[in-house]
Image 1 (spheres, one colour):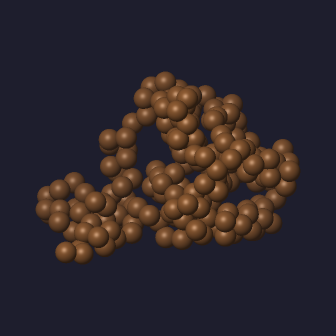
Image 2 (cartoon, helix red, strand yellow):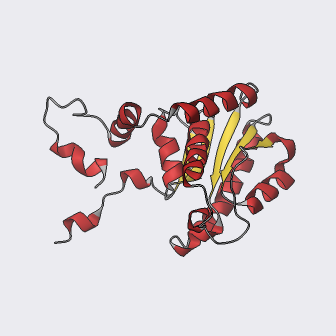
Amino acid sequence: TQVLELLPWLRPDHWLHGASPMAAIRLLYEKYLVPAPDIRARIDAYIKENFARRPILGVHIRNLDKGSEDPTVHATNRAILQLVDRYLAQVPDLRLFLLTDSNRVIDDYTERYGDRVFHIDCSRTSGLVPLTWRESANRRELGAEVIMDTYLAAACDYFIGHGGSNVACMVACLKQWPEGALHLLDDNAKTRRNWLLHDW
């Protein structure tokens, strides 16, 4: 179930009593979801090498394979592109940290925005078959890459993503974003009610 569903049931003496859903999720992440030392070291090294020149806008774009579960993914990806242009109009020296599982997205953004785009070197796909469906995939490394991307995005000054994506929602929850610095298209999946719980 969602944290949102559980918060009203907390006793007054519980350490999360009275917290908003986003604050409670962030505090739970901070307490229980600690990256393994080798992954944390990779995150820190990447930030040291690539994040000195700011400001940075994190942009998360899902591959079109997401369309099998979310038919709005095409429209959302186009809307994110328009938002990126809007951010760039307001902050012309903005750099773009791109999180994506799609080689095509890397190519499209690099062609459109040039050397202001940067990203980690990781497994990506050029088709519609999700990376996780590949039998040859190194499962731990795939997980490490997603964790790296997520924590690096949370280290950005601004972030744009799809509220229906677990990666984007995790980025939204990892820190308290300043007003106007976080933009999720569609509502945050972490704060949606699970109505199936009430369908008895």
